[in-house]
Length: 160
Length: 205
Image (cartoon, rainbow over all chains, first blue to last red; front, side, top):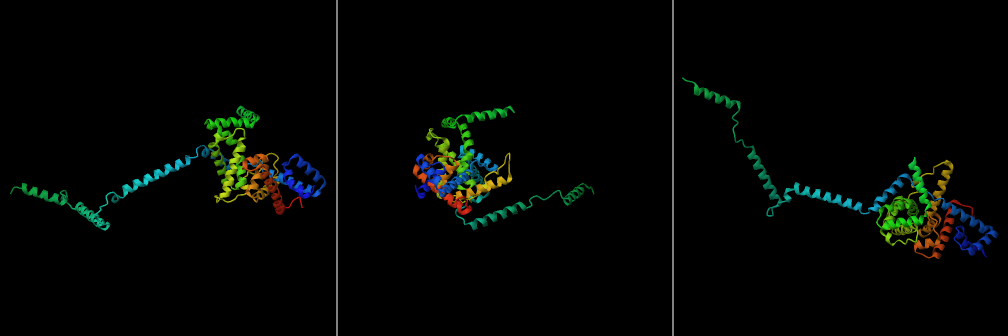
């Protein structure tokens, strides 16, 4: 058989992937042809090289990461459930914050512009401040008042 | 101490049982909803599947995702598993389909990493540092040359040389014919030879 025909079989023959009949042809040819024998040996060397990648060990942290994937495999939707729960809690907190901290959002007067609302609120605030600041009761316990009261009582009791 | 002996004994007995029989029992238990049967299968095959995925995708995070997705699909389709087949062949078929699909979509933006970033360094009794470095360098070269092959050829060579599947099994796994696998294997080995010659020289001139 010619070299060109046998060479198509050499790569497969190096891995034992040929039939008995094909192997007999290859064996007979490489016994006589040094060039094809060298090529066959080179294919065998390549197979040994590739097989050197067998039995590799995984780095420690990656091995642990791989083992930790078991949880995701057995509970594939657990991560999404946790994410959904966190998102729901955040949405609830934000809603409560908006409702409580922005009172104008509760009862917006429909007939007033925002500027009018601002002026009215400010006026009310100033009025209340003045009312609270007005002194309604005289501080009767001041020392000056006490002195006058004592003097008046003394005048009333002095018998001329 | 006695616990250690007991553990070793159980392991030896487990290995003594033929793997397909053990797997069949575990698969039956899984089908009945016994999640405890998942752990032995996961422990036995997770690293082998990881290396296949890593050689295909060349990124450790993508490979971790691939192994996870493979086992998720295994659990989902365990009812359809044909127990006359080997479990690992079936799991590997799912993994290869996932990897090929991933490579086709090229959805990952992760960078390729080298073999040294993922593999633990050689160690053990009779450890020779020089020999270890030489072996590591050889593995790096082989890994780089493999990555230069097109995915169909890389798939065939990984399944044949690294995992030891027969051409018939590979044809079944990849959904092709026996003749196609033989042709791809021939092309893959020839291309590997050409790239190796070009990059590093070799015996054949």
